[in-house]
Image (cartoon, rainbow, N blue to C red; front, top):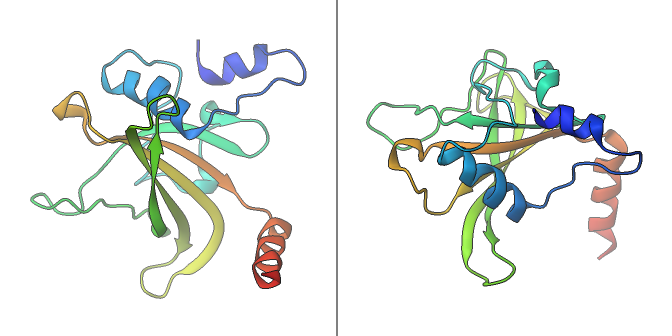
Length: 168
């Protein structure tokens, strides 16, 4: 059963709202060990955020999916995050995802924003992605799998966040 089918089967009022620890430990670690089959796989390098398939969509405005990191250069470690019409740009510091019981690091969360056009002259959009990665992959051949949460910030949310930043 796919994640979207599970979400439709939930009673009214219940929804998929996993935290970063649950996403890393329950979904991503199982994907790396070939046990996870509920989320779809998407190639981010050919997929524009506004064209994401409904199979990964949960609720009105959130997508969850697995993606395999494409390398920008064959011998390098930089990830290629370019699409046909733009690119995903990392913003802020990577956040550690910890196990609440032990405090041990289990993964990392990177926040990216989608820009239309080509760097460095791209135009920022409201599309945001949280890319979750295992801290220590159990299988070296699958170390590039990431779990992505994509959503589009509404204009009001962005303006409200900006205003609250000026209050302090």
